[in-house]
Length: 169
Image 1 (cartoon, helix red, strand yellow):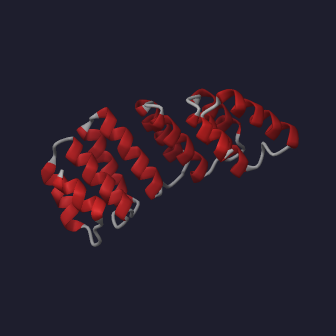
Image 2: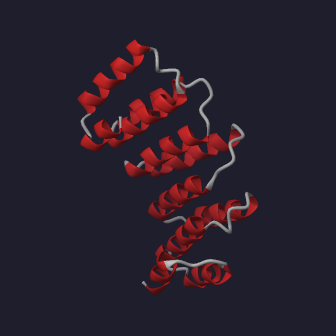
């Protein structure tokens, strides 16, 4: 499925999906997640959402794949709404979730939403995760809130070239 996603060929993706259904692998969460990711990379988020809705009990990886697909296809409000649904279902976000969510927040240019995401990062204990901190710095920098970006940067235990570069931009 990775090759199909890389080609971004929706017809080929649909053919592969047909084979997945015929072979009885549709209930395999890894295959289903890969398939919904493939549809999103082929710019068919509607098909991704349908597949996600058909999954018995989608976990965090499947939820992250759907969220990333929405963001990749510039469906930022839908991504934030979907994230709210994931939270209501009891899923705890991981660093991948929060990095993707910050991308949606940046695109929506909502200071309040960005601050809410930052609070959630702290609440769920992801404030020591380097990729999350880098995305927070980028988020605040894009909003021109350099005071908060610097505060996040200063509080980071570990910094990498991305942290430093983001602060210099």
